[in-house]
Image (cartoon, rainbow, N blue to C red; front, side, top):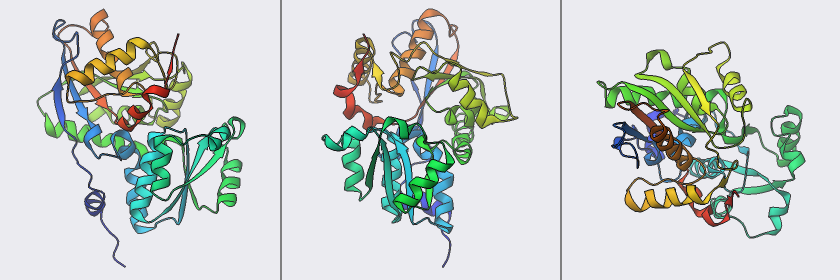
Length: 320
């Protein structure tokens, strides 16, 4: 049987690459003379959007030559990763089981994300907090694979070494789309570290000077360690993580952040949500307003997708 090519995979899944690179504005960018651009990875695909496609790209290509029979992966009830992976498996005819954080959830109405997974013929396996904390333990993964009769496990968030190559493609696209532009810094939301590591790892040949990760959870030092683990010996100095913009922690928000997202969405065709992109856009605007980003700078924001999470607005915890 002839092995399909990567271009055929893009066609089969209706992937839109390169994603658009657009000049945008933030509430305080014009007044401070800061030029803002956005890499619209949210437009890669309606479901496999943003860094979820970037992280899964190399894995999906390998499946065309040697497809697994049953894949499992980890995530919460609103996980963008589980949502995208379940859709990909359905499209490629591969069985999928989502290992979902929160045993108690099996007795509640399913989130829209989990409902979609079931609609795509995916299975749900709920685990308690203690078991979920073992999600990187090889012995536990083997135990789950045996119990669920699966032959492959994708790490939580799709964050694995293979993900870095897909994320690094962003550099090629930006250089092709705007070859004359140099960016003083690029900002992106950070939860697992793989996207930031993928960008930093190829910084020598890029038009971006500095990379800034916006932590979407409470993880000072922890997130830096995650990025460092991906980079290994390829450690670089032109990156750091801002930890002041998580608004209470992962999947938590504040009234101010919700208002920021809602106002931005009402006045722009580009849409953001309060878990990832909203925190990144908020951070960029605050850094512009307070002078952390100097007047006259050119900034690139990476929109990492995940807009399906907007359906969780009313369930997101608002920090006090």
